[in-house]
Length: 450
Image 1 (cartoon, rainbow, N blue to C red):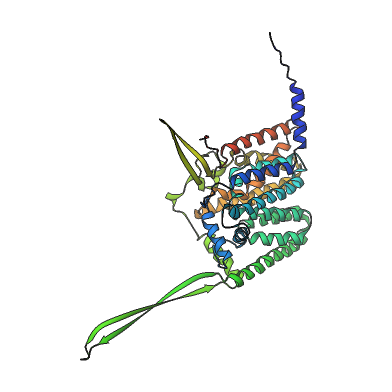
Image 2: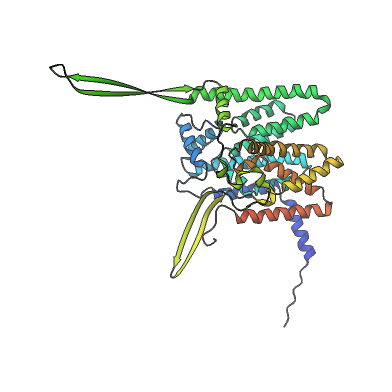
């Protein structure tokens, strides 16, 4: 007896399409949040992932009223201290606030994407493309400074597009208070505003002057308050005083010499924001941490991040290897592996994004959206290339985090320009490709999967 199965592919395709239409940003953010809640418990033994080794102790010092980690602005450590105060000095207290912040940041990015790309599915697609990047995901789930910077940066842009300029400027000042890289987002906003208002340049200049003044005023007030409370020292001087006492006998001859050493310290306290900013500039600027040519690795060159040069030879943030022996069989497993592995479809997506933007400029199609994306990519990526070429500055591929949102926008923008009947299929295919990449390099692996 033969059993015949008939499958209506058209009906299945229609159901998949109907389900995709019902998939909203709220559904995706819930999935993203859930993935993070799985991730943050690993490791849970007190081990720290990557620069948590710096920021967890700095957050604890901040909680105890001590200034720490002065080479970066204070907000990230204040958030870390608040997390520890609320939830304890453990993996949950360190990482849960970062998960909330990065999820909210993705929502702000989605709002900006809706404006730039004209709504869904393109805005939702761009948000998913960004969120599935492995480096972006990892930095949104451990105690670092980049999550708050991302959230505040795109809150700033959304408020700007809503024409709530005072609130936008204050948000920009708060972003400055978290991470120096947010300067590139400020440059993006300034360059875009000037380009759009080039015919009324005098008014644009006055607007940007007021905007900058408000942003800096917020930053300076916050730094002043921080300095007044924590009294950070930009330098500490150790002074040693040595006193020698000669002990004489009854005949007046020296018997012995007693040497006493007294040590005292004096600190050069920061009392104004200019000192904070100069300290950061001296640390990060051209005369800051510079690598010897022989110690520079491929992943440390910004140009290599968007070229197929050792794409899988990336830094390990944290790794656990397990050896399981059953009888005569031995297997090696890696249940936890935080690796700074770019999601290559997104990082290399800068090239199709650039092509799509070029075509838009030539055709003058959606010119303002193309301009915003192009300015965002240029303002956040090119300074890293220039810095690398001029002074061989230390570079880490996670610095690309500030360019990735604009690449995601550019990629969705380029796909949107395809014929309507193909564009959505290409977007869906691209998202699925990224999803497979994301799952393969997800930092937590069940035991049994190498």
